[in-house]
Image (cartoon, rainbow, N blue to C red):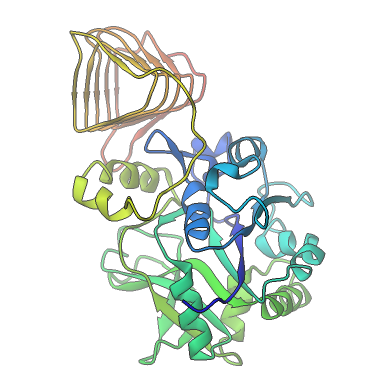
Length: 373
């Protein structure tokens, strides 16, 4: 491996991305994923495993949960002498404002970006889940002599999924001709993974150019315009890939990982996904409990039936209760003889009076945080 040095940026999604319900309480990066992870653990672990020791995490709105989870960053196995995770905030406008985009966040912190010693930067989003060795991306980028390299994933189900995501149109040599939006009009698309590799100086120039052109331009807008003048290449990603741009996407991506083959593609012993560990006692399964094909976190008390579901930490499921194809976030309680199917229960929800909560597989029922039903 050549020793090319890059620093990492974990970006915030723009305002076109909004996951109803869950995002009212925390940014997508702080969403619980498979009970024990947070979504932001994936980009940070990819960087850490790729020997990227300096990482900037951009937080736009409701920063508490991300700040709490990332903390000093020590649990991400980042070299404590040279490495550092910085949380950078952009405070300039309301969370749903069109001005509150990635470029405005980078501009506010441009002096910090310019002071980075590393020659290259890798920018990855906080709302996508995938595994990627950024060293390979960086080496391919440097060897090709391109100005910018963009990571993309080829899909054949773009009519139903990946709505609102960006797409790349590529020529035969994998040169990027333009960046568009997936409107769901064709099944085969190259989904842009919002992951960029370029020189730090190129990045700074793009940020300044974007703000000069228009206050509402995002990084993908300015790169799209510059495709004509700069050499922009695509780099294909293979393996598990999920975008969490809607409640439905979050639901499907989570439950899909109950399939062992899919999960073993994402979770590899040689490529650990780091997270903040919470010490709690193991889950207690009572005699009346029956659990099949599910992820169950620590500290739960389970007396009822759980099938094809993901159960967060410290959840209580009482006798006779049945949970199917659902995601139950931490510290929720489901009382006796209640049936829950195709639902997402947010943290500290308490289901007492509603005997049945039943959603559709493609339209899960969402129960608010701290709600009592």
